[in-house]
Length: 242
Image (cartoon, helix red, strand yellow):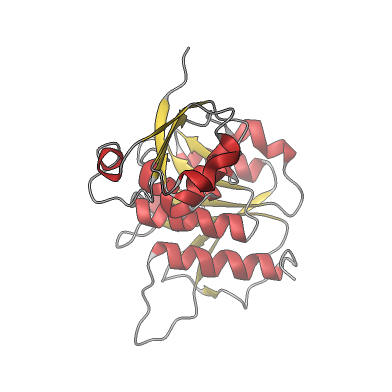
């Protein structure tokens, strides 16, 4: 079965993809101005020099390609079963409940990479493909953080619990405040879509609901900001970040 070919654009995203041995590269498209940044790859990756207008036709309207587009294979799907046994006793995974905005997903990947999250878990039927805008915003983090798609989020949480993970849901109605509640061991941090938040069944599958200590005058952050703050605090508390 042939691998799906996707397009990745933007300097940092493409450089990271080119260095990822799990991808098979079909063609690298460059402008004369951007060619120098990719010179070390040109001897072993098929490439073509073109212009900005041509590159613009290869990606979504309004996207910024920075003079480079890479046609490459999508990363092979991984499952929880593939990865969970290899995770340590202080593992941290992030679980998203119907977060679909590409800008948020890209930013979340960056935070996961920066703060040493072991995997990002998303529902199969309510998440976009991790390419294009997501890869561009992630700025290379897509190549570092495994993205696991699950058919049923509730079953995935039960599976994690069966492997000694505690599930912490982030919600404004949480009775426990981030930074004042001890979090250790294997943890899964759950975040919902903006507006709707975590769905009822997802909340019911959480061991603890936690809220951020925001100002009473302004309690709402977007989901990418919430993930960044939460993951930083949890990993710092777990002494991963010194």
